[in-house]
Image (cartoon, rainbow, N blue to C red; front, side, top):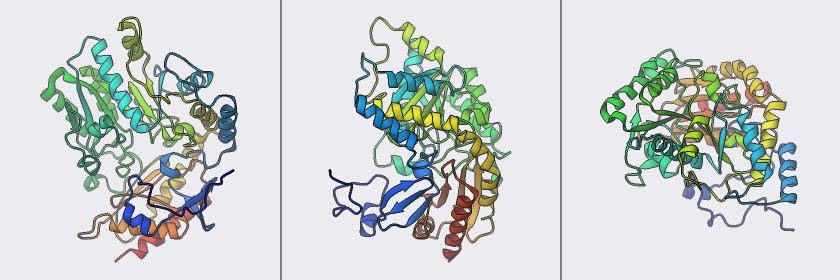
Length: 441
């Protein structure tokens, strides 16, 4: 049997995603295995995971329960199509997810990633508006600095300029709300800032501009990949009210906030706002197998299905929708979240995590700290003429010292697995503080 090499002898064939390939391949950082709260490098060094992989390994690495569920399913049936056929694991996974979504959002469409979930949600929104006789509603609204993956739909409603500029005009009929990042009003806020609810009223302005052509608004309850933007108090409530007033669907992208990250199973529960559609991925399988899903309110499902002629009601899907191994992993992961009360563990640890994050206030070049649940963003003053340089150097120092952090621009994002103990947080924030001090110049 061929074993996975600890160190590959050829780095050139793999075109790495969201990576400075030339820089990385001149000085590679390789992870060889993972267990619990840590990765281990190819030379055996422990690296504490301060980011849950990529916001996704919420239950910690190498969970035996998930591994064994995948193995059992692979031994029984490796693949089955879900076009005009079904298999038990997919139905079981959908029902398991529906037990924890907000009331009414009990129809689950499977995808393979957060990007596919975003595009799927947007297509469902358009199909719903057409099915209910509102075919003029073709416009999709995102938000500046929003991240909804890299499909053309999610990229179009997304609002991170660097992700968009290489790919042309993208989808038509898209507009954006302003972002909520306002450190001049909210710097060093713990939890949801008191300032900013009025920013949701920009949707009323878009309605005045575009009339009844808006199908849906897609936002993250907490924006993660853009640098941890915490929703202002009352902001999401106002978006919900405006959507209801004007016949617009509200989509929450919970690819990051789902599965306990904010101390509740889904972020919708934490913020007290129920959307019409939720996208998810990442923590759904604890990242053991790629999988995403879209939870849709029953009235949307019923409208699309009941108004369609006989035959296929929604002409959309993926070869691997509800893949047997992914479905088995999802069932095991959700059971872990429930059995170990991982959302409750996140709530119990949130205060300690918050204090640790805000202990960095006053360090050189730290210009803002923001947090919610087990997510924190530490914003650094960029070096003159060298944006991202300071944060990248902090990243390298932390990795060399045995802690994995994530950077986006000059913002450090932390999102450790929900099984983190105080000792892990002490090491993460202690190492980060030392790295920030070392980059004071």
